[in-house]
Image (cartoon, rainbow, N blue to C red; front, side, top):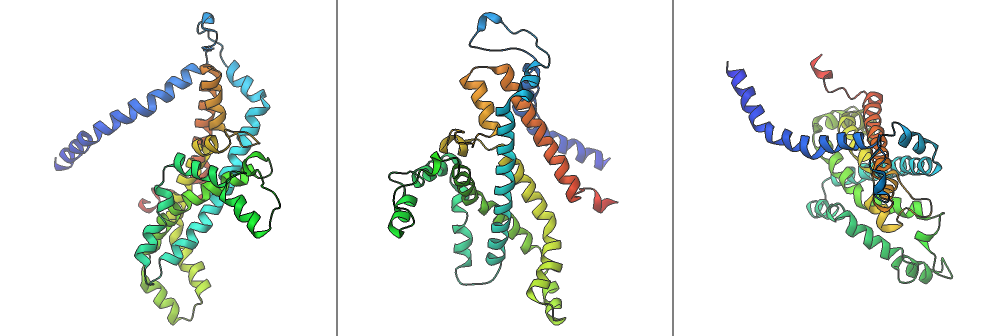
Length: 295
């Protein structure tokens, strides 16, 4: 009886959140899925909203621009998450050690993450500016270049410039998550390893890394999903030009610039399907079974 009462109370407190999630998340997804089967072009309202079935999806699958954007999205996600995980782990290991000013250092690394993405993107846009940017000024002073270089207007460097800006902003998130995981590891394990004569590398390989894997799995999954739907950073820096267009930028371009809400909804549904597939595959490959401890 007491258990049922507690369950009812729990559902009572969860109900407002569930209603908000249903209203703000699930209904727009269902609406987009519905619109993806119709022709809804605001540029030609006289056509109405005829049912076209899978035509929007078939058109997208034949569009080379879609495949280029999808490749850019996967490439950006892989490179940025890989760099952020490596640098975040390095920072977490450093901040987990005892040293003077550790508290200040922990607070300082959170500054890039606390800055809104649009603000940090605009900052990096000025840094990369070929006329007044600090990066070009520094390269010219050091003799690396003899003339300013258009970092964001070159297909050879635009992608790398976006990755650098994203790594600068989101590496603190990875470091914070991994630092929390490091602090959960029992220090007696390292003391026992020292007694047994284990080296620092052996302790990292056989103690730190295995015990940190669950936290790292969650952090990498969150960052992967966040990186896959990147929009604001790319939009501010290049607007998708010079081979940097991602799936989110393409979706927004088709929907709001060309006013094609039917095809734009199909793009959104495809992106949602990719996110679901990534989540499922990621969890399965890493063996992150939330019910493993109960069995």
